[in-house]
Length: 106
Figure: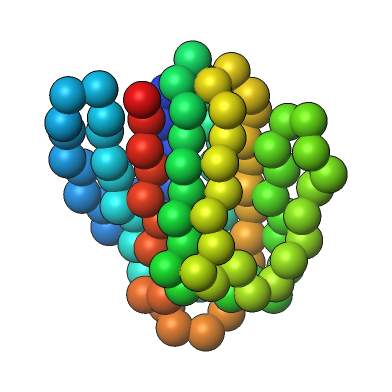
């Protein structure tokens, strides 16, 4: 799946969007432990800021880099250069509200 914004099943997320000149910020809060996956590929940069995130299974892939299966990725940043593919799938554990993400497009 290639899209301009990550897509999540509506029943497992809450999100808010804000716009400024040249920047769009979207905060996504995972509110369920269901398996999910998403991808992103656009001609703009993507910055994912993870406040709290722990998964018991899954992976994160940024085109051009090795796939990551890190389990605790709390307080991490993921930068995806414009035009590169980003893919993430996860089965979360811990607090059902504990995986907010911010997506920055420029």
